[in-house]
Image (cartoon, rainbow, N blue to C red; front, top):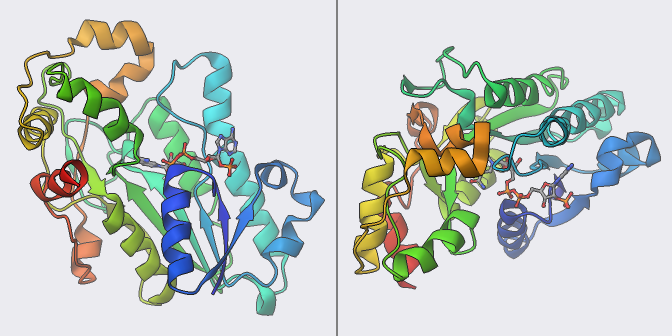
Length: 287
Ligand SMILES: NC(=O)c1ccc[n+]([C@@H]2O[C@H](COP(=O)([O-])OP(=O)(O)OC[C@H]3O[C@@H](n4cnc5c(N)ncnc54)[C@H](OP(=O)(O)O)[C@@H]3O)[C@@H](O)[C@H]2O)c1
């Protein structure tokens, strides 16, 4: 297949492209400038693509100044709206057959448990962004199959979370964040790539899917497993006030969390290679 990808230079984009290319697919990076200025030739690039994978988005874990908030929102919602409008304008026969977009479990209200049928959405900035992001592609024509993955924290050797935590834990400076009781919905990068690839080719995949490992954990359990896998103690908790000091209003991303059930993936018979945090961290930290 010929697959157009936004956010292609990012962490998930790079892992996905490497795997897709190994399987013989051709990947075309859909450049950022085109997403904001589709009249510069986005339709030409999309015409002839069998599939579009939408990953573009500015980092959300940064201080939420007015400017940063605009960028976080616009880099997901405006780009997706432009992509959707452009796909709509392409004659049906030449349109991509499938559109797969990243979304995030941050859409859900924290402190509760959710499957895909939940309507208990976050009422803050994160919820506004993610709801807007999903809504932006709702008018993709029915001839293009639309799949949305609500992704949890992606774990991999190359992920920011692991790259930042590994040296801290190795030095014995790791610890839970705040109370540690907040849910920590995660997914191993190999399972994420596998889910995207399955959705690309399996025509039964359609609509919204939670993309998190089936065994839910909280932050304290994640911390304990991270430390144990590296054979180190985890004695240096990051107190909530310190996190608030560094991240301001964005600190909720670390101090709170929703328990998320990948119900639709399980119903579809999707096999997770890393269903538990132990399996995921063992593969990531020991190799
Ligand atoms: N990684 C996770 O744990 C996780 C969890 C849940 C959801 N997600 C979502 O999945 C998507 C991909 O995640 P990732 O980890 O690969 O993120 P990433 O490494 O930060 O990459 C995102 C990509 O988006 C593009 N981008 C950055 N700033 C932009 C802007 N201002 N306007 C338009 N495009 C911009 C860039 O690609 P180009 O330079 O190629 O344009 C960038 O490489 C993101 O939208 C993220 O919110 C990720």
